[in-house]
Amino acid sequence: MTHKKNNKSNKYGYEQKQTQIQETAHEMELVIDTLHNMLEPLEEYIGKLNHYPDWDKRRQLYRKRIVNSDYALEGFEDIFLTQLFIVKASVVNKPEFFLKEVQKEFHKWISATGIDTNNCPDRLRHFLFEINEVLEGRGENIVNQTRELVKDRELTTDEALGFFSKLQGPMNKNRERGSLLEGKNWDEAENRNMFSGNFEQGEEAFSQISQGFGSKHANFDLFSEQKKRRGIQQVQQQEIRWDLIIDISGSKNDWEFRKVVTAYYFHGAVKSEGNVLIRKGVKLDSGDYNRTTGELVSQLDRVYREDYFNEKEQAEINAIFNISQSSASSSSYHYQQKADDKLTNSPNQNDNSGKGGIFAIIGVVSALLIASGVVIKKRLSRKIKR
Image (cartoon, rainbow, N blue to C red; front, side, top):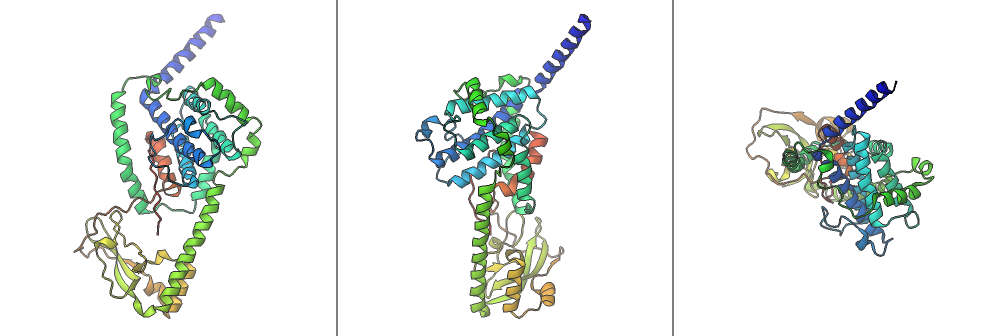
């Protein structure tokens, strides 16, 4: 009996050792790096709270990736939540021992920053709890709530291609780093042990922070602040468009519906054309087309595609120009394929792909990270999408 038990124990030990060998130093570096990419905007967010007077002395990742702190608290919160989702994707299917090593890094960060149950504001407490949930293989809140947030938000071709182009640098860097670390074990990752804190003290501090907090966190909306801002932004955009419609109504003789090329293929042929609302006298050139998608871009006081306006606003514009609903569907904003025409003035190559944020990249990031373990070093981008 003892002999069989020892064999079973040895077999288990051998299998665990083999699993550990398979988790290479490069994989550990990628996950730890992703963790750091998440903690840095969280540190910026905490700094913007002005809750800790000496936060600049406590923070651990100042100016590692983020080179500008002149953004609002809300912006750093959004980036943190995006990165938290990426961390969740990067630890999928990792063995328990691997997650424990990453969790140690998180607990060391808590220890080093001096955050504890007596000085932790409530919203930050929820954020720390969700991070720990992710690192323990759960973290369903960030996944489910992110899916709910973006379920009605389609990733445009512009955003997708722009995102993939920005992936190439990190991917190439990761391949190069992977070749340098080939054959090394997970515990030889160089970016481990970056924080000065003691993980056991951090673990105890987090245990006190989270004590009896699970039931309260289960119903916590991670994106509640973002949803509030989203509603405000939608109202602002509606006001801008309605002001525009009023202006068009007062100067409708300066506008017309004109048939133009609405998109080009990459090789230069016409992809589609249709009638758009355009100011009289405006001549479209390559600068009016997106370099990535070849599509005509709506521009204030110049030209507007159908999708710039919602259905109610389109009806109002049709009324201004005395266009019936039936003719509008077949004339005003009708798009049709025409691939046999040749482009004589191809779209220029001005970059128009920096429209980022959590809405644009969530689906693509999750698929790519789960499949390849790529770490995305997301940069701040505050461009407004028209």
